[in-house]
Image (cartoon, rainbow, N blue to C red; front, side):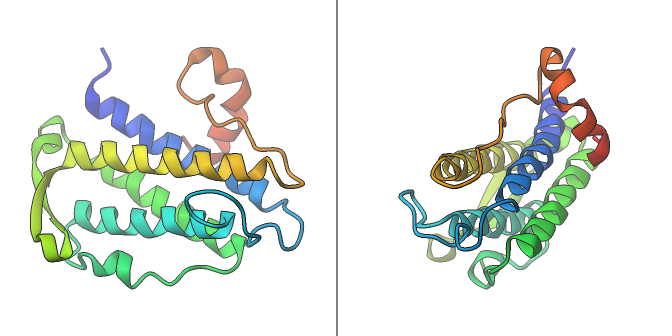
Length: 179
């Protein structure tokens, strides 16, 4: 029987895998395409990928009870180059995997403080924060995926992670990432 904790751990692995696939496409872009203005919530692939990482840093701080609070997002310095952004995102994804690996089922209902600036310090359940992080990242990766459609690089398939049927498509990548 798969538990919620098992699912959240798989979603943390999916984050690493999906980001790896997406960034490999981004790294193949022609000069100027990474930062080119596009139609989306954020105005470029660069801005969207930086937003994903900035929010990951914020929620990782909350989850790890790092004490940085909203400054984890507010003080984020965007990366200009996709290679360094990819490395930073991979490190954040691995932090999230490690965090999920240490959780117990009971931890999912434990509350940690989230710094909501003028709205105050709001206790949230770890399980709810993790679900939010995964939804947030999937949402914005989808926007990057759509923006890639207007570039020289085809967007990669990002939904072949959970099913046994798709194992043949992801097996080599998953093994390379140590998942």
